[in-house]
Image (tube, rainbow, N blue to C red; front, side, top):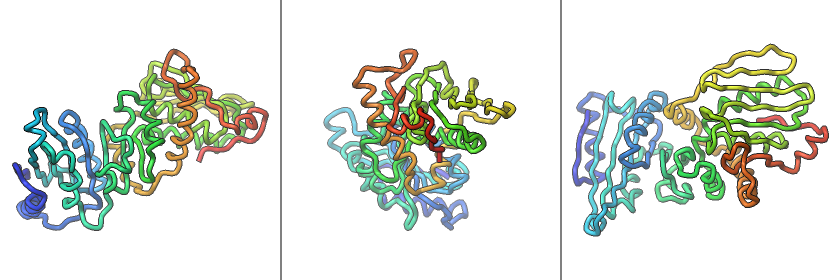
Length: 345
């Protein structure tokens, strides 16, 4: 069921939600969280589609905030709230409210969103495209226990990682990091089977790909070795190589779907490692609402290496972005000389 409300208020929207639930015969509320999506008209459809699919795993109230401050001085001086209430199959397993804020009201979105939050339920805020530099201090971000950004949508994906690190607040995360979960799990499992000392590593992926940079930074931070960043044609991350005295551990994915894992002394095997849709990424992030300490450590580690590399004028192989190429933490000297390397957690 869909209800359109023009020039409305938060109170009327709440009344519309109750009326819509009664009309379709489901007055009980079984939602577990509120997902606030801050986007624009161009990205709203894709973001809502992903959120609706994720809601099948996490029933939620979805509030899509679309700011339309206006082009002319008269439009900017005014204030109007238009809403679209959707309950039923079109809203997944929860309910959706699309909020279009016109004029000055666009600068005070939190005043509209606050009365619409589910009582005694967690709040997650997601910026599918342009996110504030400090999500934790943003008026909408302060309402949320978990804040999701996406560096890949930024004009400078690699540079945005520095912004994310400098403005980090516990509860922040990024979909560029979420995309790495299968890669990190597979590499950790491979190292559990092979206990040789890692002397160095290499990560291959598309140029200007934030996930590739984060994976290189994670390996450099956790293993304490030099990690070389190489540019490939993609799609996304294409290969990771860990160099040991017994041979190379290689996870190679050239087609974006199926990867081949090679471990010295073991037969090569194929593993499913497909590129995931946004709905799957959001569903994963909604499973845990506590701060991600490994993400924090990785982006904090990356600040000094991304910035120092950029200042020194060193780029990656193939003319790609300045990033984690050859970023060597102090522990690398020990690892290179035969010391025991840390295992990814």
